[in-house]
Image (cartoon, rainbow, N blue to C red; front, side, top):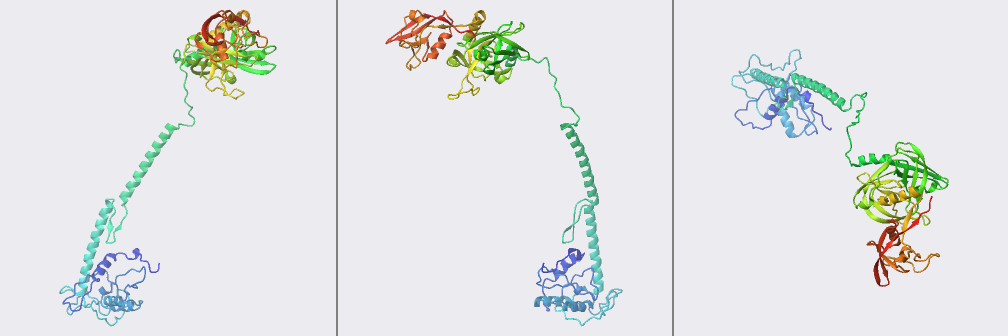
Length: 556
């Protein structure tokens, strides 16, 4: 800052008096006025020889200090004028104002001297040396006026007593405000006082009580949430009275799973795994032919049950035409599953697949029947199976092959055998929601035949089919293929009047457009069954009844 800083602590109790002096000195009056107005006198006069406070007008940051010299006893005015002469020069108006204030004299009018008037010699307070008063300076405003008959000294004491009474009233008001706990203001500057001791004490006690209550509550809340570190985790005891509803997935899985097994096959070409299920309590197990094919010859088949026990199995028989096989373990305490009626299945029926996909024993998945009579060919060219399959979206993965597909009653309606894979892929990509199962009716007939004879048979009509034909229906080849005639001599087709080049349009009213569809539709029947074929010869169409003949699959 460029100017002096005013310290509020240095003003003490003169602040109210300064305002009154500035207010009376703000106006101007002429020397022609009949009587000068009465001037207010501050309670404490400056002692003689005390330099009147002053400031340099125009200095930045400076604040005007009130001049008390005009109310000082006689002789102090001249001393104040001498002190003012030592200040830096100011403007003409400021110098006139300062001279006016310094020239005010307390000399009483004639006949007004009283016993308490100060001496004209300018003697100071007790204990301070006397200073001769300089020649008085004429007051352009004229001498101050007082009440008639009053001396300057008496007037000063009266004003002092009035100010003391005023001060006492303010102190009482401040004391009352302090006791009530509310801050108050002191003087015209509006200084705030702090809270009283009672209020501060009350606040401290309240804070302590709130802190204590908060600590107790917080501790209890923390204990209820976290608990002691030594407290054990809660445990739940199994309720033996809880059971699953009959027919629920959990109930069906619990009933069927003990009869489902996992097969581990080893042979000259390596190892493989698959699934199977018990069909007779004396150890007979049904599975897929491609599951145990690697053990044919000098391989080994091991069966693992749901309880973890293992047994070595013996191959009873197999058929690549239906992709089915039967093995047996040396046990008499097994629980067989019931083979249901696959012809009674409808699209949308719920199903459950159980097996060991990727060697994970006892895996249960669910879905529905997505379609019926899907013609599916599995295996390679030399060992190819034609399946009239049930399609399901229950998850079937490698390792599920040979496991059961059961309905809502827990009966087996299919044997999980194949999954679809995207075109162009050489290896299985796993489940994509397209799984296929051999119907239980076909499985029952074939399994029983293998158990009884050690081999299986399948029905035939005795014709060779042209796989390159792309017209409506399925066409019988026109020429011999590999030394085999288009229509087998003496076979069912020849007996019914079929000839080379004829086109078969349907089987029992079921349209066929590909060779696989016709083969699957025929093999879904049993040897000796009669089927009705719609045949076209040139422009002539006719229905032909044929009794199916039998061919025998090779024994494993």
